[in-house]
Length: 225
Image (cartoon, rainbow, N blue to C red; front, side, top):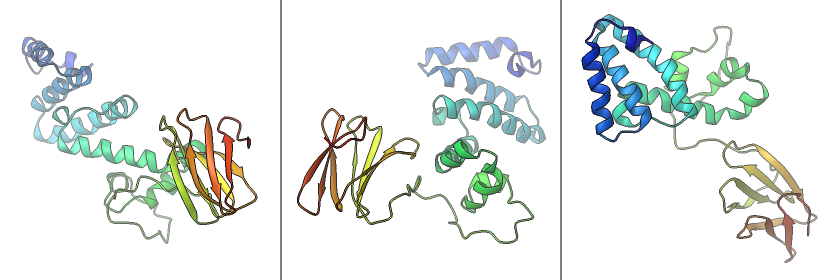
């Protein structure tokens, strides 16, 4: 591990730095990685610091995304921005990641905002003669769920926040995974649906239709009760 094996700084001082952070009540990730980053930068020349940041970003950034975000104190501004952009990229393209992961570079990068870190670090393939018009930078939109062919009339989250139900003028109710945005199942009815609501325990879904009827659906099976 570079932090331990690096002989360019005093190991006693490095150990004391780690112990001091334990006394500060910081979380484990911060206690582990903040002194490493600080020491690596401190013991590197100005020319080496960019490479150090890049390597640290590649290794620790992956751990952070998979486990939990490091606090702002543990990350410099550049690293924090990179991790945030990477998480937004993953959220926006999780469907493609599951279906065709090799398309992430050739297809997903070109739909990323012009000034996103993902796009500036991975240039669009040169053989692409025309690229789509995209926003200049990331906005508040995380993802768009597509599937209804009629206007969406109602939306509701399940009590545990894991499912999102939508009803529409195409006479269907769609249940989505609220985390990934993937479609879980489609419930079909004979009339246009105007509203949906989960029961308090999340096991039933009630819907209202233009005919004035109310339907009760079993969320687990998708069957009309």
